[in-house]
Length: 288
Length: 148
Image (cartoon, chains in turn yellow, green):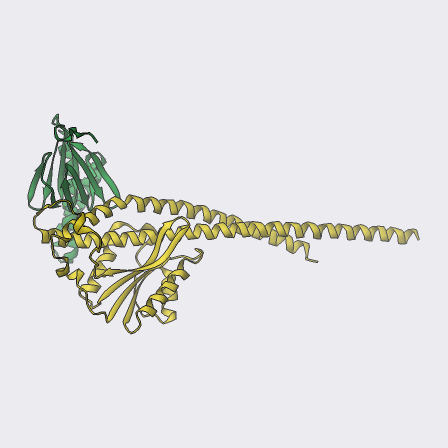
């Protein structure tokens, strides 16, 4: 029979755990909402930049722009967006699974990794991934468009000056508060939209100062919006997952509390019965 | 929508979008903005056009001569079917501008620029210069909008 005092202690400590995970769930819910709002607020800008790119792509020969240049891939840079903190379910392990899958797809190439988030930095080097750079000073939770832009500019330098033939980004795409998926996409060279940009173009625009000038400053902006979007979606996914796993943890703790309560009651009842028996037994003995 | 748009005085639909928010949305009779090739004035019925936007003032005018002023950073604008959409790095409506903050920022940037001549990194100088431009832009916006 379990010790009554032990049961009592466990009951209390599990209660405390449930309280903590419950609080974390609430924090995660709030943050999730904040990042969802930010993702929505950033959409009009990204859409407008995307439309401008489409309108210009046909006026300018996109293929000749250095950021569009397809090279034979020998050196590939991979940016992995992980989280700084744990307790978010399979958020990071899904990413690492994707990283592994991605590596298997690109066997024979020289793969260099660039990492955002402490979790990635503590995991990837141990598993033999060649991590070149850890973007440590990026404050994920407070990430602004300007910071995302800096990351995107860094990516362009890798591609243009540092001899990388391709830059992929692996992040978690946010579909809804309960659906998210680790995905990889090619950041550079830019892939011209295969879509219906040519047919969809209803009118010819006057372009000033010149198509080239507009295009040259538009392309980096477009990359910045994509990077910002990847970061914001990753964060939204992280908090969505944390919310779910903390919810599960709280529920599990409460179930455990119920079980312990029953065990405790039974143990207590048994002890009382035993004591009663002893008293009765003692009284019998005295009378006899 | 109805077909009256071509004759209406408030025929232009304006949207000013920043990376993380919509800064302004409304209608106007005409606008004026600083583009890559100088100051542009746009009236209803303008041909489709895409231009770059330079830091400066966007003036959004209604038929009565009143105007709303917005401080713009660098960006782009597309014009078609009387719909004008700005996508800029940053922007502030005149009523959002904190005068004291803008003045303090201008002050600070000037100090940086003066200190800069004694061997700071070039990057800092560029940054200080841009900061000064931004601050002056805000101050200017505020000034223009307060005596319309």
